[in-house]
Amino acid sequence: MPSPYVITITDGEGSERILNGSYTVTADVTGYNNVSITPDSVIVEPGINTYNFTIAATGTLTLHVTEDGTPGGTPVAGATFVRCDSSGTAYGTPVVSDANGDAVFPFVPFDAVNPPNIYYRQTASAPDHEFDGTLQIVTMTTSTETFEVENPLAALRTVNLTDTNYAGLPIESGEITFTEV
Amino acid sequence: MDKERATVAVKCIPARCEGEYVVTIFDALNNTVSQSGTDKYGKASVNISNPSGEYRIRVRSVNLKSPRAINTWLSLRPDRGYLLYFLFGRFFIIPPCRVEATFRLTDRNYDGLPIEKGVIVLA
Image (cartoon, rainbow over all chains, first blue to last red; front, side, top):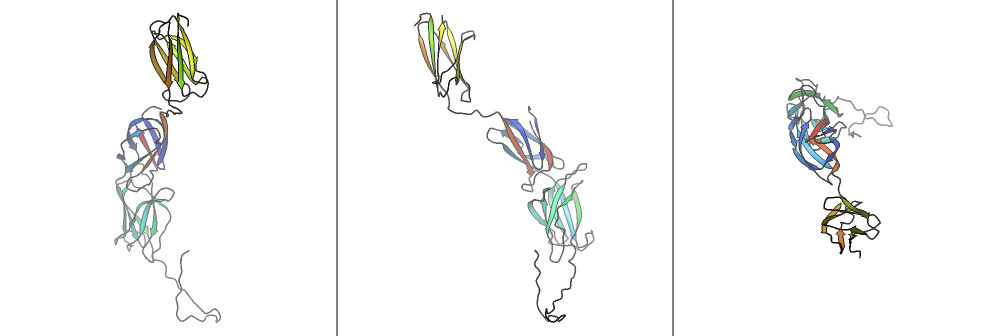
C-alpha cells in the first residue's frame, strides 16, 4: 500500500507494512487534541519496527465525593482515584479529593458527538468511609464535567465478646482487631 | 589462442556453489553477447568472436550479497585474454525496504495509558 498509510489504533497499538522512508504524522483520535500528536514526523527504517507516539486531551473531569453521593452532601476528603485502561490497569498520578470533596483529573478526552470512554478506579477513601473499588466508566460531552461519587460512612456495628466457658459472661475489657483479607 | 577471439575470464569472490553468479556480456549497443553461470569456484570463461569496441561485463549474484551486481567496461581486442576479479560482500542480507511496523499511541499526561480507538496517518 502506498503512502499515505492509515494505521488503525486499537487499545494503544496498530501495525502496518510500511516502506522505509520519512513521513509526516497526523492523528484522528476522537476526544483528543489531534494536533498535539508527538512526534509529528517519523523516519521508518530497517531494524526499527516499533514507533511510539503520544497525544494529549484538554478536558477536566471532577469527581465530587460526598457521603451520600449528592451535590449537597457532606464532602469526603482523601478519596483517591486513578485513571485506567479498559482492563483496569492504572496509569499516571492518582488524584485525591480535597476538603470540598473534589478529585480532579486534568487532560481528559471529551467529544460532543462520540465521547470516548474514560476509565477510572477508586483506590482509597477517608478513614471510616466505604467506597466502590470497581472499574468505572464515564464519558464527557463538554470540556468540564463533574460526577458525583458516594463514599458513605461505614455502618456502626456492635461487637460482643463473651467467655467461652461461661455462656454470656461479658469480657470486662479488651480489644478485638479485624484485619481485611 | 584464436586470433579472432578474445577470452574473458571472470573470478568471483566469495564462491560457495555452482551458479552462484551470472556473468553477462553486452556489446556497445547493449546487445547480449554471452551469458553463463560461474562454476563452484566462482569462475567463468567466455570467448568473444570478432570483438570490436567496448563491452560491458555484468556479474550478478543470485543470492543476497552486496552489491547485487557489478558492472565493468572493457575494450576487447581479438588477440587478448582478460582476467577480471569481482568481489562481493559475504552473507550480506539486503534489508527489506518495507517493514512490518507497530505504532503505539498513548496519552501524554497519563504515562503509558493506551488510546482506546483512533487513527494515525503517515504521509
